[in-house]
Structures are given as structure tokens and as C-alpha cells.
Image 1 (cartoon, helix red, strand yellow):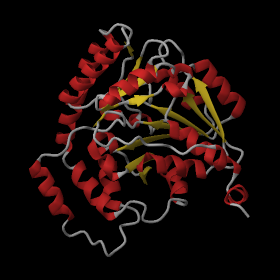
Image 2 (cartoon, one colour; image 1 turned 45 degrees about the vertical axis):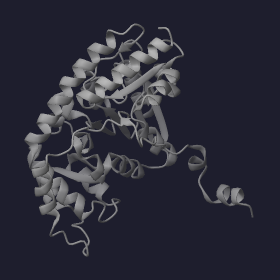
Image 3 (spheres, one colour; image 1 turned 60 degrees about the vertical axis):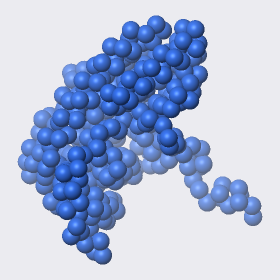
Image 4 (tube, helix red, strand yellow; image 1 turned 90 degrees about the vertical axis):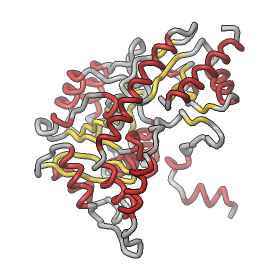
Length: 364
């Protein structure tokens, strides 16, 4: 039997049909493609962190429930005992857990464009994924279309990124609440970029039993830990815990996250710096001929380039040593669009210079 025949006979058709998620090689480049916090820690903070790791018992399994870390997260978010917290190896694992818990015929709904993992994981598990297009003029929710889809398909899970990735905007709170009220299944508010948005649905948890709030520490500056968490009614979290793999959060990540979350002031300062730079980059982008930058409540900016030039501009910027994200391949509302993560001031300056040179080369 040939390898191809073995593959086709062993793997589910849904897996065979999808493409792997590809992460671009950023070696030697200024990395502005993955929504990371560009700032590291001061030396004295690093030294204190390393001291905290000194007594880590690597010969023992980690706390399977990450009790101390979960307690700190609940305290920081002022959650009462009626709510539970589930930790994951990044938000991706939490999304996967949620979808694995659904029946095979279940529908999953999200706005489009949205975070690619909602569809990627739904498709890989053979679920019915529905992407409802956002409004073309401002990337707002098409509320009538969303409500119509909810009525027709009764989705088991609805994902709403707040702010949305890759568009960066915050959906109208009234629209989100209307969706939560109409939904018969779970509604997950994905607040990966909450530190930069100044807006959250955490305080609504006590009012809506079917709502869950998902967050990550990646955008705070801890992407290397791969730590996400979801909060909601303790009875719902209990069901998800049944299929969570034991020891999914390793000891080093638990200790590091506990340490980091006790240094909240440092992250708040870094977040403010990023927000200040975001305002500057947004203004500069919209001053360029042929470029339209969209308002963002996240740590990145989506911008539209002149028709059919996005890939050429992307490659030109890359040749100049800067990696951003080419979104135009997703087509639809993202036609001709690129996305740039907000970096340090000198990185943002280098990006703007590279973009201007690219536009000049195109005689734009």
C-alpha cells in the first residue's frame, strides 16, 4: 500500500481537506506580524523571575488544576465562587476543547473575517462552521444576518472576538448583548486584546449564564508561555474540564504566570506605550496617498492598499527587513489588506519608512 493510500484510509476527510496553519519565518526580520508585545522585562524583574523558578520541581508533574494561578486570575477579574476558570495551552487549546465537546452535527457561528482558528478547528473536527460577513463599510456586525443565522441553525457555540481580529474594531455592545440574549447555545467573548481596548464583558457574566469570556496573557508580553483562560459559570467549566488533558499547564508556565501577574504595573506601562504608538502609526498611515487605515482597539492596525498591490507592497517591506501580515489572500473584505502589529517606536518608524519607499517604487 502506498503512503497516499495509507493516509487516505487512516485520516478523516475533514483533516485531509484543510491546510495546516503556517507561521512565517521571521529570522533576521523586525517582527510585526503576530500581535506580540515588543517589550521585554527590565533586568531586575528578570532576576526576580529566575529566582522564582529556582525551586521548581521539574521531576514532578505540575499541579493538574493550576490552583494558585486560577485563584489569582479569579481575584484579578473579581470573580465570585459561582464562576470557574479553565486554563489552556494558549487560547487555541480552549477553542479546541469547546469544539471537541460538541455533538458531531453541531453548528459553530462567528463573524467573518474573524480569528482563523474558529474555522480551522471547526473544520478539522467535522463541525458545521458558519461565517457571517461583517458590514463592508466599517466591519461592524451585520446584526440582522447574525440573528437570522441563530434562528435558522441554533448554533451550539458563537465566537465573538472583542476587539475583532483581524479588523481591530470593537463591535457595538448592544449588538453583542442582543446576540447573547437570542442564542440558545454558548456565546464566547474572545477578549485576547482586552488590555488595549479599555472594554470588556466580564461584568456581564453574572447576567448571562450562556456567556463565557476568554482571554490570553500572550498579548501582555507572555506569548512564549502559551497560556489562555476562559471564565464562566462553574457548571459549564466543569464539563470542559472533563476533556481537558491532565497537566496541560506545565510547572514553569504556572510559576512564570503567577510571577508576571503580580507585576501588573509593568504591563500597564507597556500597554499604554503600545496604545500611544498605535495612535501615531494610525495617523501616519492615513496621511499616505492610497492607504486607508482602519480604527483599532487592539495592538495592530489593518490597512487597505491600492487595488492589487498588497502582495507587492508586503514583499517590498519584507525585503527591507520587516515582516508584517499579508491578509489579501483571504479575499472578500480583506482584499488588498495588510496588517501591522504595533512595535517599539524605532520598529514602527522603520515600518513606516519601508511602506513609504514601497509606495514610491510603485509610483503611488
